[in-house]
Image (tube, rainbow over all chains, first blue to last red; front, side):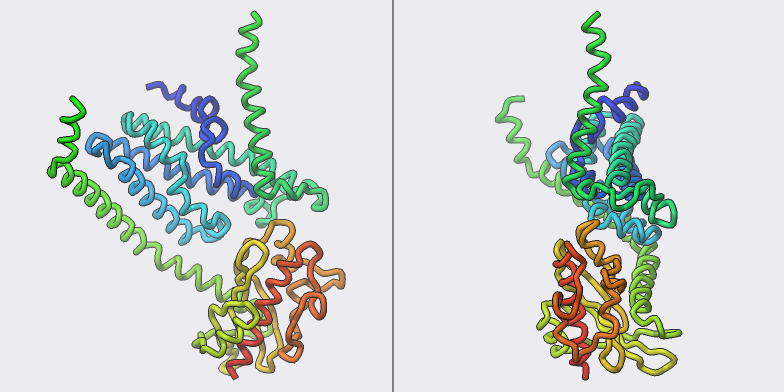
Length: 210
Length: 207
């Protein structure tokens, strides 16, 4: 097992959002404030890791024909647990994430990793995979939140700093309103993917030119 | 394994029973865990919801010192009165302060531009609005959300505060005549107006 490689894959070369392009719906919808991005990222990280562990543990006794149904039951179970806990103890976050917490059930990152990784690998490796992919997802969400919030609303750390209003860095009238809408989410994501592809392609080009 | 032989195994009753039992056991285990988690979180969730409703209710009766909100049963007349203004009545609360009834708080839903706007409207015993507060909405951030955040109109009054003091006799309240909209957010402003109209009519129907 190569944990360093797994970490690099989750974060960069096989990033769930930027490379696998999974979990688009939640990425577009909730990356409008820092608090939302962090909450969603951590929720997915926890659910992904736990479901990966359980699925890796039961992979040998799960009949092949019904594996998808089993995955969904396990994932839905964890999502409901997290949803109930958020509602009970962090109602503010639960409210701003709204329907996107229950929708983690059908978030393709989790089912994707269950099928592509946890069903074929051991418990420890699957746990590491869940953590790495979850961190990769969270970091992309946070980057998108920071960009959209700063340029769209002119604030930083919304929902968390300055009593929830966020620190105002740009006067409100100069905010690019479209960035706070789903359209802006697609534009920011496109730019991020392009930037990352460019960064990944650079070392290769150097080698080729030698 | 040849394809034919594989299909035979698939049709084997034992295999089908194995599939069913595996799924059944998994579902039972998961359901058991969920039941346990629910028993822990049910209390805090109910508390959080009740507190949210109470905060919204208290906000529309700022003058009441120690308000209490016993719920009133919704009659067909009240529901019909609200429907007449394209709004859906959700809950009606009697507002009691120090033992005497000072008015009603109405939780009502009306369509905005992006979805339903859920709001609480306070109406005093004389049928005059004491306050409007938004419970939940999905209006466009930066446009319709201005209405939800009670942004000041050019006149200096907040867009939700302009309803305070309006009474049953002013009905129908209408954007453009006796209600001002936030520019660019006419649909959201109209949505709130529908809810306020519905609430006034429903309280009147209580009699």
